[in-house]
Every structure is written in C-alpha cells, then in structure tokens.
Length: 422
Image (cartoon, rainbow, N blue to C red):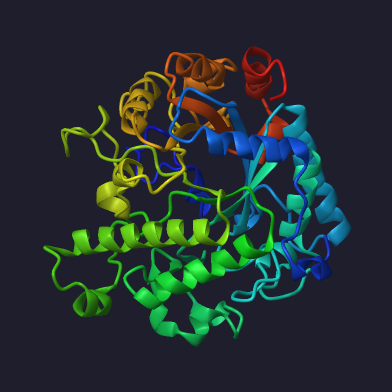
C-alpha cells in the first residue's frame, strides 16, 4: 500500500497485488435466520437509502496470503481453524457481513469447473487442498448470523508475468492470446468478447453452487497505470474498436459490457442476490470533469482504469457501491469529508445503496501520517457519515487488522458506533 504523500499513484488497498466436496451437488451452505433476515431486509430496502439495517463488514483477502490462510501449505485443519477465527472476530466486533476472496488470481477457492485451485492454499496452483473453503465459509458464516459475499477479481491472472509458471491446464495457457503481460503481472484482455464471457462463466459457477449472499468485485478492471509501460491490446482494438472515437472509449465500453452482462446473469441465476462493486474512491477530479469530486487524485477510475463507476450507479447496474475512501479527514489530495458527500450525491435518487470502505489497515501504521496514529480517526469517519442518510454502512480493510487492531481503532469504532449487534 502506498503512502498518502506519494501523489496517490495506485493508492488502493489492493496494491499488494492488492463442508465437503460431496455437498456440492446442489447449492452448498445453509443460511441462518439472521443472515437470511439481513439479506431479505437489504433487498426490500433497495432504492430507499434511509431504511433498513446498517451494513457492518470486513474483507477477508486471500491473494498473496494477505489475511487468510496465513501461509500456503497449512493443513486443512489449520486453515479451517484460522478461518473460523476470522468469523468469530467478525461476530465479536458486531459485524454482519464478510467479503471472502474466492477468486483472487484467475483461480478458485472452491472446486471450480473452469479454473485451477488457488496456489494461496497449498503453495502449488491446481493442487487439491482436500476441502472446500468457499463451502465451509458460507456454512460457518451463516451459522454465526453473518452474511457472506463471494469476492471475485475479474481480469487479474497472476502476480507475475510468466505464463509458463501457470499450471498447464490453466485457461491462460490454453488460450495464450487471451493474456497480456503488464507491469510485471498477467491480465486477461478485457477487449476480447470471449474473455468477457469466460470470466463471467467462471464466477457464475460459484453463484450457482453456493448459498452466497452476494457477488462482489473490487477496484481492478484495466490495470493501474505503470509508468513507461503500455497495455498491449492493439490487436483487439483493431478487431473490435471500430465505431469508437478513441481507444479509451472502447475500453470503457468493454468494462461497461462486463458489468451489465454480469449483473443480468447473476440476477437470472440467483434472483435477489446482491451485486456490488468496491471501486477506487475517485471517479474523476473536478479539474477533469465538472461533475467530479473536489479532489486531486493521481488516479481516476474513469480515465485510468476505464471504469465508469458513476454511470453504473446512475443506470442502476449495481445493488450497492462501496468506494474505497482510504484517506483521512483533511487530506488535501482526497479529503474523506469531501468525497463522502460526493458519493452520497451520486447515489441519491438511484436504486444503488452506498457503503463506505474504511482503511483500518492504516491505523497505527508508522508509515502513515499523524491522523492515522490517532485511534479515534476511523470513529470520526463514522460519526461524520451519520449526517448523510445515503450512507448505509461501512466495511473495514481488512480481516487481519480487524483482529490485531494495533492501536485500538477498531475497539473505538465498536464502542462508539456498534453497541448492539445488528
């Protein structure tokens, strides 16, 4: 994670890249009354920003063993014990929702019909870990009254750029023309219709087979810009870019199509399920667009990631949007107290609910500026948001910090804002 003073280049939380198998014949996992009640209430309240329960959530990141499992190659018993520990922490902190990263790098933390087992489980991509983490977390979260959404990364293939290191049966090995090396990593090419269809199929495999409460994407679409490098999609642009004024508009259309198609397919497969996205917190700066936020971010999702998050909200593509507002109040380039009202205004009069992503991982980090050394900074965020009825809850990045809480920032949030479990 980059520091706030580094002109906000790639300032996102994901920059570190950021049951039994037999039970899978049908939809795995069983919802507890609490999780079902939360889901139904949230569904009923769509389009009514002031109503319904407050979302209180945390992410469980699996990429690069960020939160779980703590290391590759642990025994199934050790992995299950660690995962249960995170769920118990969520319950103890009076949270009600978790986002479990089930597809971090074009792989799977369930026995997928499309992609290999994740290397973050065993240390070897494609190796069966001997159990089903997604089925287990769905069942155990529901038993604890927690809603659980499957968190997928659509296009990232690997944290390296060598296709030869992928397991031989990997789709990117079988279709080398689908992959683009960029910035030391591998990505699927969003400009190819067959890729767009495939990544949806891979995610929908889990949607069909597990009793998840939602489908969740993060901030990665086209990759974050890397100085001096070019994302090589020339061939795809030559074939599919006709009719667009420039490559940027074509790329945005590719992502628009992914979002629109996935939203339709998810709702067709599982009516009532939530579909939401957690984008980087700045759509566009006001200096780039009068409709943008009063910010000076070095990254803008519209221009750099080709993700028109504002459009998706206004067109009703999303059940919720969860912008990553990972800056302190008063930060000059991206002031939390200016960005939250911008997002509140964006969702106003739409069907899309607004939750705010909070940078718990910065609290007490000695590399961060003084406001993040104050245990009360995050609590002040939640207090500020009480004045904005569009803000329906908060999510904390991420599970490791929710547990460790090095300076008591999460303790303060719970004491000040979560006195009762909801």
